[in-house]
Length: 124
Length: 178
Image 1 (cartoon, each protein chain N blue to C red):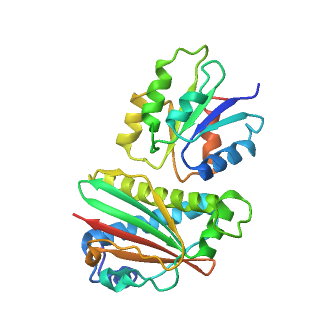
Image 2: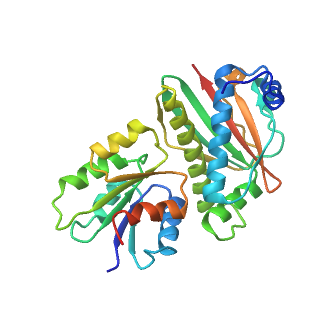
């Protein structure tokens, strides 16, 4: 079954890079939606649709951490994997993300292979 | 970084950085590492880094700049990081990142320069967090045009790191104040 993925990043270029990496890999049949910040992400978010959310941390309007906190308050019909994709790579930041609803974490810069490896932990 | 004065390689590096404050030497090493990692993982071009230019010497960037990303950091120390590109280097970086050719500075190129600035600052921030210096990262802004100047208050402490991208210029300007 094809994955439904929501990519939330204020950089259109980074969204394109992420979508290109996914579409060229093992999850190439995924359906990908995008949002330019956490606030827009909440509008696009459908609790019964998405399997995976990839969210940047440092965004205007509503940052990634507050976005995933709000997502986790919403009742969903299935387990949604939330992964932060951000330059904030310190151990303290990772712990903060995990304590607030993130399942995993990938730091920019990353390779397509690193992204795929992270996704493979949750989806086959 | 600890320099070994008995090592020929380290002595060369030490002389290159002579006169640069200790903190800046450390941050230069972090910046080099971070820039090389970004190019290796996401841009697939090997940047050539040249000798850093110090403080007030860098008031005139050697070579033109057509687009600059600027980001501020605050916390234990305050800082700004600027990344300056000539048009051709910005186009090459964006083209390589996205796997398609860009021939002029458009919204994607502006966005890519902002993201490069963000990744360089984020990488340096992460390295500094590893030695106990915690900083908060602002959002990057990008300036583009002809004959614009970028300046900072503590110019004497700033460092300009020149890189060549396929023969074209990119500069990382570090302004850290403790």
